[in-house]
Amino acid sequence: MADRIRRIPVGISACLLGEEVRHDGGHKHARYCTQVLSKYFEFQSLCPELEAGLGVPRPAIHIRRKDDELRLVNTDDSADHTEAMQDWNARTLPGLSELRGYILKAKSPSCGMERIRIHNSDGRVTSRDGRGVFADALMKTYPLLPVEEEGRLNDDHLRENFVERVFLYDDWMSNVKSNLTPGSLIEFHTRHKFQLLVHCQKTYRALGPMLSDLKAEPLQDIAQRYIDAFMLAMKKQISRGDHANALQHLMGFLRDSLGPADRQVLSEQIDAYVRGEVPLIVPMTLLRMAQRREPVAYLEKQQYLAPYPDDLGLRNRV
Ligand code: SF4
Image (cartoon, rainbow, N blue to C red; front, side, top):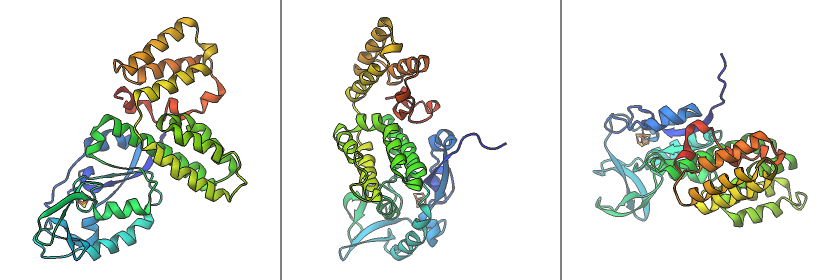
């Protein structure tokens, strides 16, 4: 029987799937990825060090600054793998254009997204603000791609934000980028308007007018500027007050299906959410019930009401 759910292609560091590819022959199995996210994400695993020819087991490696250049070397400096990794990056990255997100292993000189140790030519740590050699090339090649580290996915807000961005980026790539028309661009904007509003009011106010004259410039240029700004805004964390504003705004659209008592309960639950007494899912469910009872066409399309599958349970924790 065909899969009912189309899973979204997402890249992942191979050791996080439990593959024994680490330098010591071990893995770093991330159960949240394999047991929860894998229901909706089709993981494509890569181990840059193994695939660049370093083998398993292999000596531990780190990043050293030598003559003002960052080099990927064995920790005892007995071999330099920089060119091997750069060649592998150049061969591999063009084939990753179908990915809609990437989950990286933290602290790795190849895969780490941030706070990677940089050593001097004597092997001493001089800073902790580096990025893994593969992670850096990945993020430069695909600047809009949602990327996160597995450790940061333990944070409720970062996890929710990453999953939301993956679903949104998938919509963009599948329905706009592959079929760019004025209509597909406007429909995308309509679907995701409230998500943008809660993430960044300033960007929300800028992007609406940008789409008001789609003949002013080549459509491709407008679309690129639009999605660059949109994906950047989506990285911003949302406060409870931001969500409360959006929920109240949505309540206005549902005026006909909400009697005075319903409105009272919803307002109380929005206030309780702002005070941190209930999670977002509580007022959101009340709104969705009202929308289901008497659907408002405009809200039918709003992905803000359900930006990803409910059973991920992400809104129970923010
Ligand atoms: S962190 Fe990256 S390079 Fe290291 S074992 Fe995992 S996948 Fe391979």
